[in-house]
Each structure stands twice: as structure tokens, then as C-alpha cells.
Image (cartoon, rainbow, N blue to C red; front, side, top):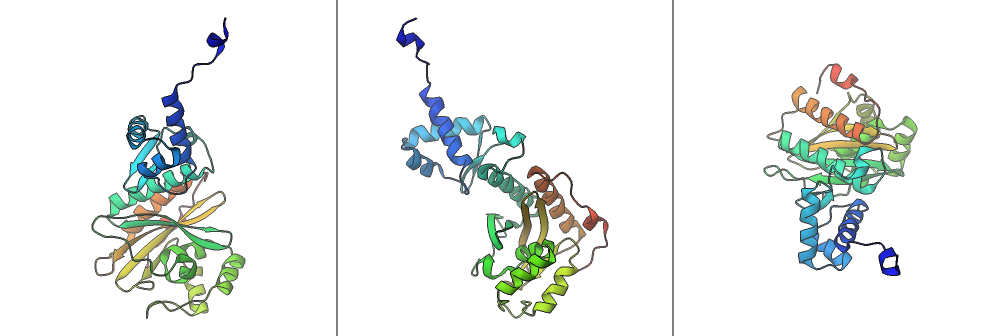
Length: 263
């Protein structure tokens, strides 16, 4: 066998396709095709052709704001901390909620002592609430933040509140620490923000709990259209449980569904 025959045959298009999947898998946000082309130096035409094939085969999924991993990506078959897999699973869960409920869906998480907004999927007829104050400064006034605070151990909850001022964002914001703590301690497995963050907006959040993850899934609705009832909360809780299991939880507490529904 000569040297040429001993050389492995490398398929350039396969190498380029794998590179695209690798970039998406390590991105914390959806990536537009044009950005992928810029990152790799490939022509837009080549990038679009490769992406089309990867979407068809299920390794990538196209979202309105860019590409995320598809369900055929190998890491979906195992527990993983990959940023790309995490984002893809979150995006899928939020889109499920948006399609079922007709409301913009959000996911936030608690990490290193702070609240972080992870992702948003907009509903066509009920667009997102204008986020004029960041979640790190408004957790006390948002369903997203309050649900996480309700799930935290007492020590972590008190520590968080000691480091953040309870600013009065609207006349309905709970800015009294004791009143807020009482509300959080009696949360029945979900929380609601009725015009506490923005006048005219009502938000509902439920917990998403998995190993090394404390998060909340929420929707927002115009207050004059919001009907917060057992049916709505149950739909959110089911989606949150599925996401929790996909992110590594082995079980999920169903007590909130079994308890009495009160507002």
C-alpha cells in the first residue's frame, strides 16, 4: 500500500457540517445562519445548504431567532450540562407552552446568588412584557423571580433579599420585606404577579427543579384578559415537570396539583 492509499479519506462537507453542529451545541443563544457563516468563514450559500440538511436529519432545529440543537443530537439521549442541549430543551418547552396557552413564555434560573433570564418565546397575539428593569433588580416584583425565591432554602432567600432593594416598580409592587416573605412562604407551588412589574400585565410562574438547577417557567398576559385558574396552572405545571425530567430530575413533586387551588 502506497502513502496515498494509506491516507484516510476525509469528506470536507461532513467536516463542515460537524463544525456547525459543534458551534450551535456550545452557544448559549440561538444562532442565525448568517452568524454561523461569519463564524466559520463559509459562504452563505454553503452554510444554508448544510443547515438545511442538518435540520432535515434532525440535528438542528430552526427557531425564529436562530438555530438550536435538534432531537437527533446524541446528547439528547443522556443527561448533560451542555449549554446547547439545555437551551434547546428550554426552547422546546417554552414553545410548547406558547402554542398551548397562547401567551409569551419565559424561563429564568438562579445561579451564583443571582436571577438570570434564560429565554423567551413570544406569542403572536400576546407579545412579551417590555423588560424595562432587569430581573436581577426586579425578582421581588415578577412571577419569574418570586417563584425562584419561594423554592430557595430559607437561608438563601434571606441572603438574596438582604442584597437587593425591594424597589416599588408600580403601585402594586410588594415592597415590604415581611409581606413578601409571608407570600413566598405560603406559595402553593405557583406564584402570580398582578401588575407588580408592569401595569396591565399579569404573569404566572411555576417551578422547574433539576440537579444543580432552580428555575421558573412563566407566562405573561394582558391583565384584562388574564384568567388564572386551575386549568391554566395545571398546563404550566405539566410542561415544567416534563422540562425538569428532561434536565435530569428523577421525579417531581405533584403535591401542588393535588392541593386546593386558591388565588
